[in-house]
Image (cartoon, rainbow, N blue to C red; front, side):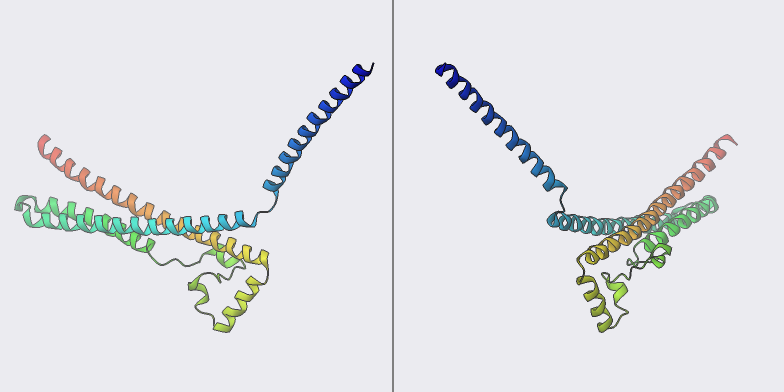
Length: 213
């Protein structure tokens, strides 16, 4: 009997030890899950820092693309204008039409590219309808006096949630502006491609017309 009691006690202790280990694992998993669900100030700061860096990198890329579009269009305009001087007299009218077509499309594309390179400024109906003053952007607070700017900055800094709201609003309107710039660059590229196709198509059509007539 004594041996059986000892065996039962040993089994009970083993079961309790195993149960305690399982409970510890559950508590550990629960605590890790709670940590993930809790508010993380460092994570929020990293999020804002990453979003700001991505926005301004995208802004720089759009300006670089617009600069490339301007360069390509200016080179093509120079080349097609040079055709007027080397084209034979019999083809002056045809070449002049092709040059006019290509130059017109290139000029429109260049104007749009220039518009996309304008310094960013918060505007539009969404901005006017919002209560955001744009205090984080130099183009908005440059019209304020030092006292007004200081008062607005204290208003933002005195409230932790208000500070994050100000950053969220700033990122949102910067994203809206970037979307507008991207659309302008996209239209600029499309117009350039259409002009190239139209000019080449016109030249090919003229050559085919001469062959079959």
